[in-house]
Image (cartoon, rainbow, N blue to C red; front, side):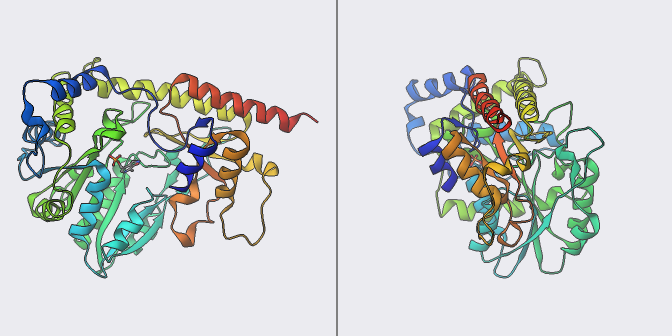
Length: 407
Ligand code: PMP
C-alpha cells in the first residue's frame, strides 16, 4: 500500500504494482459489453452465491481437462472476488487457533497477515539462492528449498503449506522434483496445500506449469487458487476462483456466503465466455493462453537486457510478470543509514521513485519481519507493460548509469 501510494505520487514510470498497462483481449471486453447491454437483464441481478452457473460450469470443464479428473461445478469450484478473497476464504476456513502454516519466502505479502487473522502461526522457510554458473545471469531456478530445512518445518501442529508457483516475486516455476518433495511431506504429515496458481499461464522458455493437485495423494488435500485478473489481463475485474475437493470447499463456501456472498454477475458472465473461447481454442496458436506468455517472454527479455546493460543484475524469471534485480552496483547513490530499522532495499526503492521517477518494490516486502534484512539488495519490477513504458524505464536507467560513470 505504501509503495503503491509513492508510485502514484512520484513515478513517471511505474514498474511497481503487478498489473498490465495494456488492454485485456478484445474478445473479453466484447463479452463484458454483451453481458452488460444484452437482452438478458438478469445479468444485472444477484446470481448463485458460490459462482455464476455458466462460470463454474466452464471452470469445471477447463480445470477438469487440465487435471484429468471429472469436476462437479457446484461442489469442486467456487468463484471469489479475485484470488485475494480466495486466499482469505482458505485461511479463515481451514486454519484454526494455534495451527501452523508453512510459507515459502519470498512470498506474496498478504499470506502472513491472513494466516494471523485466522489465529494461525506462520512458519517461514526460505528459498536459498545458489550462485549461477560462471558468466551466466542468475535464474529464478537458482533459488531452491533446502529439503532438510523444509522437512524440519513440518510438525503435528502444521495445518497447511502455501505454495505459489509460478512465484511472485521471483518468477520461480517449481520443478516436478520440488513439487514432489512438498507433496510427499504433505502426505506424510497430513497437511493441506493452498496452491496459489494465479500466474499459471505465464511460464517461459518452454517450461511447464505443474499442478501440485495432480500429484499422488494431493487432490484431496489441495485448494487451487486462480485469477481472471492475471489470466485475462484484467486485474480490476476482481474475479477469482478456487478448485478443490468438496470436503475442503464446503468450508470455504461458509466463509464466502457469510462475508461477500458473491462477485459481480456481469464480470463472471464475461469471464465464463472468455474461458468458453479458450476451451474451443485449447492449445491452438490463437488461444490467449498461448499468446500471452509469448508476448510477455519478449517483454521479459527486453527488461533483462536493459537491466543487465546498466549493471542492475536481473534474476531471469521462468514465469510470472515480475523480475527481481540486484541493486548492489547502485548503492553508492543511496548510502546506507547504519542502525536504521528500514531495510536498505526499501530505502533504495523510495529514493528511486522520488529522484528518478521509476517505481519498483523492495524484495524485503516479501519476507517476514525477522528476515527482512536477509535479502535487502534486490528490487522487483513488473514487466507486463506496453513497449513505451519499458522503453521509458530503459531511458531512466541509461541516463542514471551515464550520470554515475561520467566524472
Ligand atoms: N496471489 C498472488 C501471488 C498475486 O500476485 C496476486 C495479485 N498480485 C493475487 C494472488 C491476487 O489476485 P487477484 O488480483 O485476482 O485478487
